[in-house]
Length: 210
Image (cartoon, rainbow, N blue to C red; front, side, top):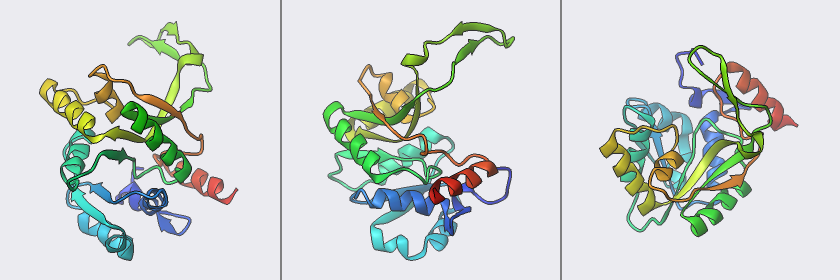
């Protein structure tokens, strides 16, 4: 974003971005939420979310030095008895509860699932010189979104293996894939955008108003 405020705390249609994400998950419903924040921002999130936190079993914890570390911090804060965990990016405020439920159902069957949408554009694989090496088969390519849903024991095993091998990965599904375990792609929605640039706030408000 380039600003001083965490993008998840920016306002979208009158509410912080992260509040939209939380309300979508709570509407599924889920048994509770572990909200992982940048270290030192726990109070900022608690203050701006107000009564939403204590009223909905939301626990705020500090994250780690990387995406993988932050997810692991969240996993370690889970109460006993959890079987499935939904990992969602707080900067995806437009996710639809029905799609979260679909991802949960597939994870119950396969052990791991992720929302994703088919790639619309032609995708090229390039070398370091920016010369095209290969045109990838578009019909086989998917753009991955969140949430991603996992059997908790499976995800913990994947995180332990990644930590042992110093593998970061760009999402939790990639950690599970390294174990040779299946990850089910669940058709998502192109409106489930990630807030990354100021233009995304404008686009998200347009989508919400449509």
